[in-house]
Length: 86
Image (tube, rainbow, N blue to C red; front, side, top):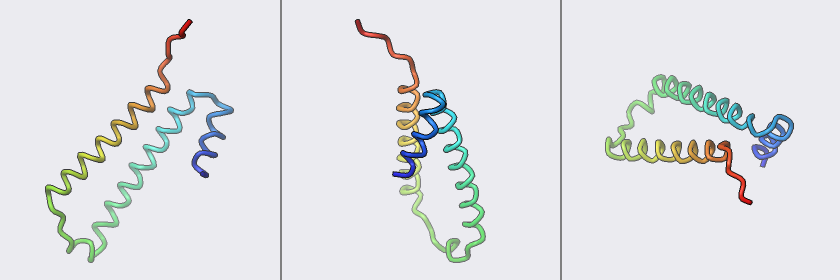
């Protein structure tokens, strides 16, 4: 609920073009948190002993990439100008 209100507070005063900036900032936050997670994984001794099956890791990477691609297409489809129907 708070995310929707925050997005509305940014989109309403600044217009639809601000959605691209908002999503860019969100993507930057994802990258930063991913890097922090990588650093924490290296320093956690109990995490190092856990082995991950390579096939399940590949499937997870495929699903994540597909989800990001679908979300990106939906974002840019809403920003594209639509022809007017008369």
